[in-house]
Image 1 (cartoon, rainbow, N blue to C red):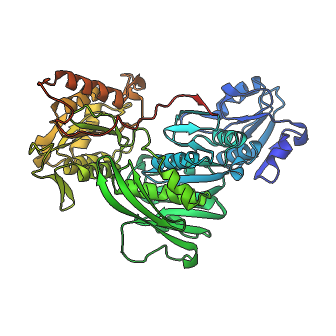
Image 2: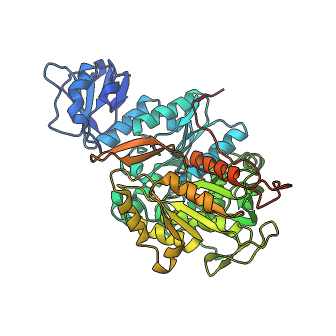
Length: 565
C-alpha cells in the first residue's frame, strides 16, 4: 500500500516528501525494535515511553515514514523519511492501522463489551456460544486471544490499536464471521478502538474503579460511553438497564437498544429520549440456584429460551442475558441460542472451582478486584451455600445441616488489593468482605512498588472494629491461601479473590521497581487441598459421602497456544 492510499481522506498531512504515492508502506509499528524496511513508525508520547526519542532507531531499521502530532519533530539528518503530521497521533494511528489491515472490523460481526465488571465473562460466553454452534468467532480479552489461528493467553485487556486491527484481520483471513472484544475505559480514552465499527456495544455496569486514571466517575462514564458512538448503522446497544449509568451510555444513540433486566415485574422503564419502537426489553428470570449452577429463563427479541448454566449469582444471570442478546445481534436464531447455551462454562478465574468431589470443602478462585465485584461474588456464593440464608441484605449463617451433621458452613474470603492502582476502593473492599464473609483473610494481591503492609492497612481501615476478630492478616499470599484452606471446617466455602486467571505476582524489587514471580492462585489452592486431604484422618469406612460434596473437578481452561483447525 502506498502512503497516499493509506492517508487518503484522513485528518493528516505529509511533509518532507514531494510524492506520497511513491512511498510504499509494508507495515505500521509503534515499537522501533519491530521496524522493518518499508515501515511507518508512530512517534508519539506513551504512558511509559516517548516514541519520539526512537525515530532514529526506526529509520536505521528501514522505516520510510513517521507519524507524529509533534509539530517540531523532523526526520533525522541524512534520512529521507516522509513525515505524516496530525493533531492526535493515537486516533490517526488507529485509523491508518484499520485501513492498512483491510478495515477488518467491517468484515466481522464485532461485539464490544465495556463496563467495570463482567467484560471477560460476557465475551467468553459469546465466543463459546458462537463456536459451539459452528459459527466461527474470535476473542480478544483479558484472559484469552483467539485470532482465528491459535488460542493464546492475553497480555492486556484491550491491545493497542495497531495490534487490535492486526488480530481482527487474522480472524477474517481465517474464515471468522464474528469476534467478541473487551473494550476497557483506558482503551476508549486512548482511541485504541477508535477506528473500529461494532455490530453491538454492550454495557455491563459502572462502579468505583480506575479513578487513579480517570480521576472522576463522570470522566470514567464518559470514556465508557464512547463505545456506543462506534456502533455501525443498524447496530445494537445492549445495556444493563438496572445500572444507574445505563441511560448515560445510550444518550443520543440512534440504533436499536436491548434493555436488559433481571427478575419479573417492575416498572416498564427504559432509556429516556429514545424511540420506544427501537427498544427491546430483555429479561432473565432466575429459577433454582445451587452452588453448582443456575436455572434461567431468558426472554428478548429472540423469543424465550431456558437453560441451566454452571454460573451462579444474579450478576452472572445478567452476564448470560447480555451474552445471549449479543449472539442474537450476531444472527443466532432461538434454536442456535439454546444449543450455544448448552456449551457454556465459566471463564478461567471467574468463580473457577479448584476443589474436587473428594475434598470436604469447596474452593473457588475469582478475579474480583473491586468492592462491587467482591460483594457480588461473596453474596452469590453465600446465597447458595447449604445451611445459609439471607438476613437484611447480608448473608448470615443459620443453623443448617452439612451432610446431616448440623454444622453451620462458613464462607471464607481471601483477598488483597493491587498496588499503584486506585486506592479509594481498598477500604470499601475491606468493608464488603467483612460484611458478607464469616472469615476474612487479608493478604497481598500485586503490590507492585508499594509496601504490602501499607496496602493492607488501608484495607483494614474499612473493616469495623467489631468485625476484626474474624479477620486474619497474612501478607504472604501463598501462606494466606494455605491458612484458609487448612483452618476451614468441612462444608465451608473458600473464595480466593483478586487475581483469578493470573499466573504471576508483581512484587516490589526493593529499589523502586518491580519484579514478577510465578504465582497461580489455583495451583497454590490445589496444593493446599492436597495437604489437607493427606492430613485428614482416614477413618474406616470414610468415603466421599462425608462432608459437602461438589460435583466435578472445576471448569478450568488451560490457556496455551493451540492451532485452530
